[in-house]
Image (cartoon, rainbow, N blue to C red; front, side, top):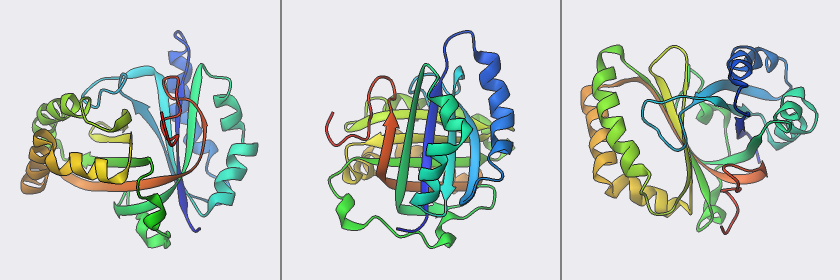
Length: 236
């Protein structure tokens, strides 16, 4: 199958905010020697499905790109981090194979690792979308203003199953992870939604981002729940 990615969302009980913040600082270092890991980032999250400016100090996320599914499976089966997540109030993990990946993240370009696209067998099935960008300092105000409108519009999108805003230090390094009924539904929102289209046009025209990544994925396996459900199940 070739390289894959995984996304992990961990929600802790109220009162454990200091532990969440501490793990954001230390977990990335703990991943350094994991066999088969190509790239990883620990992330804070916004509140609920809000992709505008907000912080949920009880919730964190992790994005990892792997050499293959075997490396991802071995990590989930034996590494101390997934064992800790399973003790949290809620956790959700998804191993994902690429449909399309464009751009880079801190210089890492997933496309250069010869990922095998998911192909036609992903058609009509639930998919995940990962976006991230580094916002230029001079574009922050304009980005925040339009991101609030996009957040409100996204929350009403047909076929959207789950959505979380993510970010990392320093400020201006932001992204989203979302789950949709199928690829066609996600593509239709991106092309038809006025707020999303306006923001994308402004970002390109005004050069808001110094780096960006856009990726779509089909599920390989999932574990746990996100807000009480597994959003990548075939039917919900």
